[in-house]
Amino acid sequence: MAAISVEEFNRDFIIKVPMAAAIGIHATQVGKGEARLLMPFSAALARPVDTVSGPALMTLADVAAWAVVLTVVGRQEMAVTTSLNMNFLRMPGSSAIVAEAKILKMGRRLAVSAIELIATDTDDMVAHATATYAIP
Image (cartoon, rainbow, N blue to C red; front, side, top):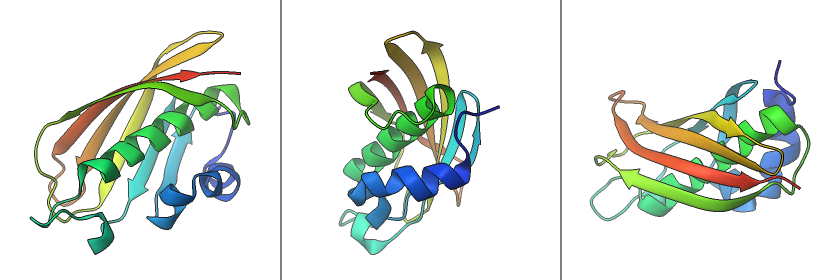
């Protein structure tokens, strides 16, 4: 069982990242070591070629990594990113993006996760990230 629920994450944690809350990122599913988040498409996230921008995708990946760590460690709001590596695979277009995050390794002080970013209109993986979080 996850240490936090979807409702707790959306109510108590996403507001602590105002940029993520402002662009509508929210959790749709959590389980211990797994989290699924959604970022709706809006013109504010687009590049001039009508595709979701890289900074928006990186924000979603980082928030998803934080969420998946919280599913294991619980209400540790000061778990922080120590590294984030992103591979952009294809243009997502003007689509909502789903982030599917999983814990790869959970240590006492560091957690490593993998995040797949998927365009909802095509089901194509548009980016892949790995993130390491420090746990207080």
